[in-house]
Amino acid sequence: MASLRAYKRAEDRLKAAREDLERAIATALNNGEWQVIDVAELTGWSRETVRAIRDKVNKADAGASSDS
Image (cartoon, rainbow, N blue to C red; front, side):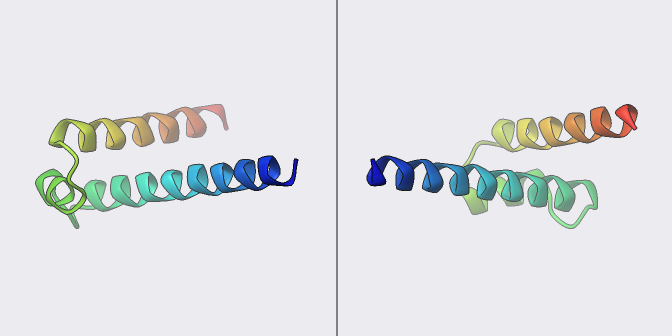
């Protein structure tokens, strides 16, 4: 059972780290600090993946601000 709990904690940390990374990418793109191609080259992801991440974060932010 201990190994299952450790796995779950690691999985939760990974999810949080990915969300932080996605938010940082979207912020950098929205502020003009980075371009999509720069992020794609740095991460090895496609430009479409980078755009999808940016759009997902922007949509979540828009939804959160409209709920307030």
